[in-house]
Length: 382
Image (cartoon, rainbow, N blue to C red; front, side, top):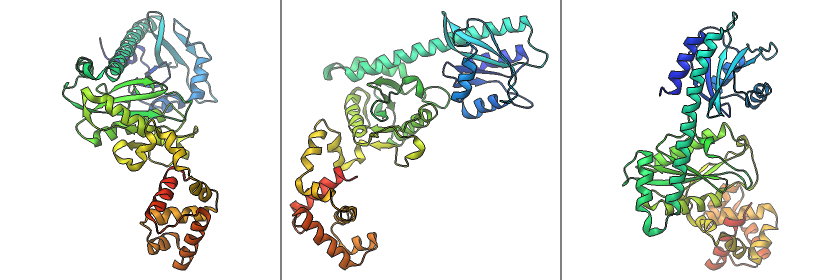
């Protein structure tokens, strides 16, 4: 079967018109070259790799999601768009996407539309098979991750065959997640600019689990960034990634535990648009340091354990005392460096440290007291 770009090019040649192919979520899959002026919707679709929500709602108001035959969409001068013909790309009665043609001024003949409809059906079959293959890949990913320790070699070989990689390859697991209650879907990381076939993707409890065959940590990081960029085009909420270590493919269950633990530490607590969060989005388990403790199953117990009376008293005190304590402990209790970082005179730093000891009842000359305060601030500091 021809690929979707070949089908789009052929449809454009038959209709003598600009043609695009989009999936059911209006993400651009392929488009034919177009000479001359371009209307606003085509420019939006090509430049943004898909239609915006308001454009999608407008097109869907013409019943294209339920249509089994070509649908004429009139031009709209206010939108700056020309008339279009929508050919539903269907397979076995299910709409898989849409083949769009910008109608020329002289219109489209019945014979040309009929010939292009055959191509739309072929595109529907292609998209259906692609979806089926992704579901099979998802099943194989979950089979490997859920397999018992002594029976993982078979699932590892099956997944390696599906991803077209060596069964002895190394891989890392990347877990993508947003705030609690925000569910991510497998199809949101596929499509143009999305993840290549050699990366296995599955959904688990609203998060996305990526099995990334790679030779270096840099490749894994790049795959995580690619997935986040793709999600950013279709998901409004801020999404972050927890990354496990590179391990033999047969051992990716361990990398999954690490990736999930890393995500647990950095997951946003509330939905937050991407543009409002400048923090790093890819977090490797190997780089978390002492914060790994928060990602373990005992993380909730740890939160309570470090909230000692002394730590609670400091967190309830003036913010400048909390900041001074944090900087002082982070800088190895150097008064000089603390003074420089906070822009304070050394005597002012000494005065604040005495107030911190008074508030907490701790003696900052004692290592055990410094550890209690440092760990508490590391975990609980706003």
